[in-house]
Image 1: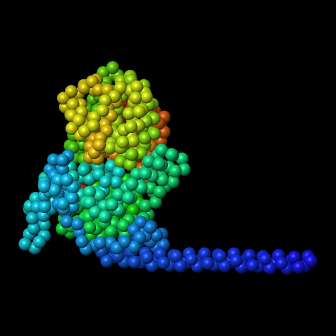
Image 2 (image 1 turned 180 degrees about the vertical axis):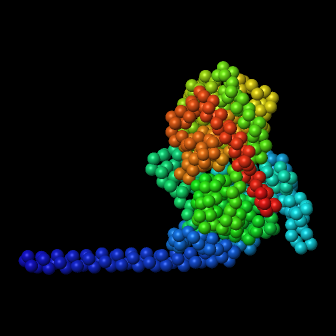
Image 3 (image 1 turned 90 degrees about the vertical axis):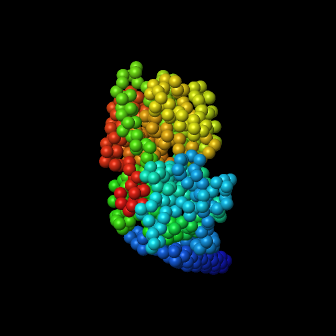
Length: 549
C-alpha cells in the first residue's frame, strides 16, 4: 500500500511539474512573441518619424539603446493604430488679442466666435525676395508656439511675445490646443491627466507624492521617443506656416511637432534646471536658462551647435523696470520698523491647481503677521474654481479681512496704484487681496503684473523660480523642481525649498524681522541683471529672427 501511494504521489508530482513547466514555457513564449510584436511596432512608428526627417536614434545615439518594447507600448496605448495625418495642415487665420496690444492669436479658419474679425494668415507673413527667401529688410514675423498645459508654458510664451512686440515684430501666438481639431483633443487628454495627478500628489502626499515626484524625473531618451511619435500626429495644427518662418517653442511637444513638420528655424526654450533627454529636440536650437543644463546636455551628446545658453525666461516689462523696482524694495527695507510698508507677498497657484492644502495652511500661519500689518498677501487663485472656494473658506473661517479682484482691468489698476499713484497706498489695502478669474489669460498674466508691485514671490520652484524678484520657494510638485530652487538660491535671488508650512513661516519671519536676507536677494537680482541673466527671451527672439544673440 505504501509503495502504491508513493507511486501515486510521484506521478502527481511529475504531472504538476509538467503543467508548471508548460505554463512557464507558454508564458515565456507569449512574452517573447509580445516583445517581438512590440519591436515590430517600434520599427513601424520609428520609420514614420524618419519619413518626416526626424531620426531619433541618431539624435539619442549617446543615450542607452532604445527599449523598443517600452517605447512602442507607450505610443500604442495612447494612439493605437491611428495613422498620422502629415499631408493636410489645417488652414489658419488670426485675430487680434483682446488682452495684449499688437499680438495676433492663431486659430483654425472659420472657428470660434470672431470669424468676422479674422485676419488671413498670409497678410501677416513677411515679404519675400526674388528667390523666395524672407526679405530681412521688411518687417519680420515670428510665431510663438505653445501648449496650454499648466500655466508655465503659456507664461514663457507671453514672455517671448513681449520681447518680440517690443522689437516691433509681427508676433503670432499659436497655442496648439486653440486650433480646434481632432489633434488638439489628443493634447487635451494628456493635459487633464497631468493636472489630475499633480493635484492628487500634493493633496495626498506620502507614497503618492513620492511616486509622482520620481515620475517627473523619468524623462529619458525613451520618453523623448514616445513624445516624438505622439508629436508626429499633431502636424496638422502647426504645419500651415512657411517652413522658414522664425518660430519659438515654449513646450517640447511644440518643438517636436515643428521638427516633424520640417520647420528650419525653430528655437526650443528648455525649461527647468534638471536636465532630461525629454526636453531637448532634434532639428532645433535648444536654448537653456543656466550652465548646469547647458553643460549636461553637451555631455549627454547633444551637438553643441544645437545648444545655446540664453538666460532666464522673463517678460520684457519686468526687466525694463527691474532696477527701479529693486531700488524701491531696498528703500523700504532701509526704513525703521515703524516706517516700513508691510511686506507684500504675491502667492500664485500653479496651472494644475495643486498646492491647495499647503497654501491654505500658510495663510492660516500668517494670520498674526497679517493682523499686525507686517505683511500683505496678494493671493492669485487663477481660474481654478476649487482653489477660489478653498481660499474664500479659509479667509472666512480665520476672519482675515480681504477684498477680491476678478478681472484683468482690476489687476492693472491695483498694480498701477501701488507703483505709480501712491507709494504709501499699502496702508489702504486689506491684509489679503484675493485674485480669482473666470478666464485663463488673467489667471496667468496677473502673477507677472503683481510681481512688480510685490516684495516677495511665494511660489513652488516652477518656471517662476527664474523670475527677477526675491522668492520664497514652497513645496514642489515633482522632484525635478527642486533643482530650480537650488538654481535661484545659488544665483542669490531666491530661497531653498521650504517643504513644510512651518519652514516657510520661519523664512518669512527672517524676512520680516531683519532686512539682511531680502537685501541680499534684491542685490542679487540687480547683479544678475547687470550680466544679462534674465534676458533669455530677448535672446531667444534675436536668435530666431537674426540668428545671433
